[in-house]
Image (spheres, rainbow, N blue to C red):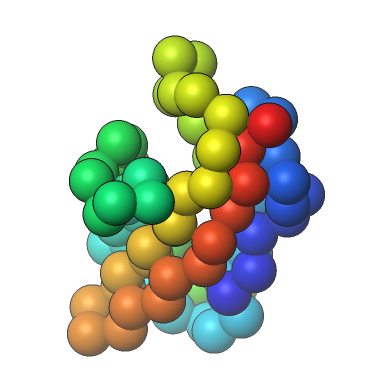
Length: 81
C-alpha cells in the first residue's frame, strides 16, 4: 500500500498493491493514536487507486493512515500540510 502525494494538502491517493475486493476501512490517527477520521468503502477487484480527503478542519501535522481489509491491516505515515 502507498499514499501519495506525501506530504499532502487536502487530498491523497491510497494505492492498494493487492487484488482484494470487499469492505475496506480507513482510519486516520493523530500522533498520539487518537482517531481523527474514519472512512469505509467497498473495494472493487482490479481497482487499485482510491482518492480520499482529509477533513477540512484537520490541522497540519503527522498522521497515520490505517487500512483494513478483512484480516489484512497496513499502516502508513502521512504528513498533512
